[in-house]
Image (tube, rainbow, N blue to C red; front, side):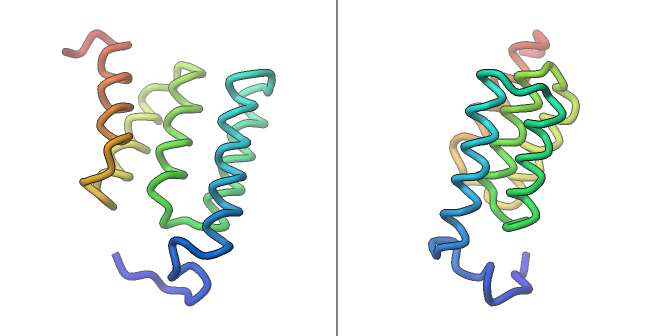
Length: 104
């Protein structure tokens, strides 16, 4: 997948850190106190900042799985693994989702 913006081109630049912070923040609040809609808005904001971030897609899958929206979580994981098939957390969450649905 070709990156279309010079700003997003560097996966390790300042924008990446802002996106990861926002995604981590969404995940933290999803696990703690936020209603699902607010957690999803936070992760959507992170995805707008860096739509090609595999880690943010995985974070979204975590939030969706936490709120038992496994069909959408599975799509996020599959998209992330298409973007980077060597991303280990993708396989972790794929296993968690399949296990929670007893799809061994």
